[in-house]
Length: 319
Ligand code: SF4
View 1 (cartoon, rainbow, N blue to C red):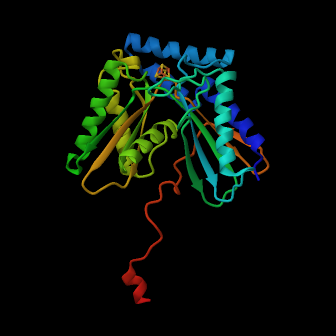
View 2: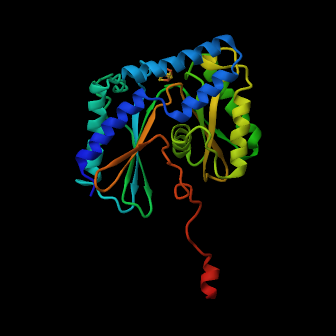
View 3: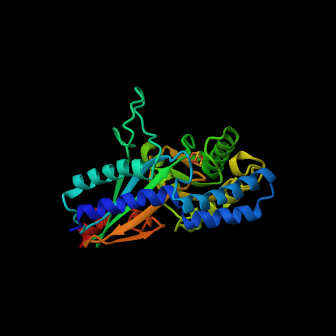
């Protein structure tokens, strides 16, 4: 049984790591972009950000003044048990968020949408978001925190199946140009695209694609992987670089996740994981020990399973 105290301690450590230490995969991607960028202002921004990450790590301070909106992803091994059960786990994650807001510190960004009430701790109705998933044959729990920035860097459109790949490309490019021109999310970014699902799941998939896959990771479907690679090139060919300045470094990586959708539509969402691509992960074992890593390992074969173990009734009747 995983002790609750270990879980909360690990959660607080994760909150600090996410806010302060840029993940290695994004850092390596940004260094490659810095080497390739020819646009003067764009290259200047990237170099300044690389220095900023170093300073944040050295001073143990948040890498951006806007510390985003902390959220949690929890993956339960099927055999995992937590002291106090899932309700206690959820309370521990909310407490860890509030404690980290005070101790890291994080900016208390969360307010009531109408009354702007601020509890000064990033907790409120529906905040922080906590998403759950499961994994077979395991007794650990994976905790992942993402401090998503880029407040306006998200868009959604319902396409028709006949729009095809050209329609997907058009919406992708329209979105990048709008985001770049209007400064809606600090680039270079990891772009996540959700294709399919219902409207809500399409958005969930796109955000997870942006935040929960590491730079360089490709979708296991080779046809989708090829689109991801094409989209990185396309996104970096629109003439905009870091922060929308002239250049060629808008996109550090592009990840696409799909979900089955209604036959009449093709929902699509686009999400930017901004210059502060903040995520931190740990696996907590039954004895309470934690292993920290930077790869969320969220999209497993199990997470992407396609259908049920099922045989057509005719085949079953023939036996
Ligand atoms: S978009 Fe990202 S890098 Fe830009 S201000 Fe917001 S959190 Fe900071």
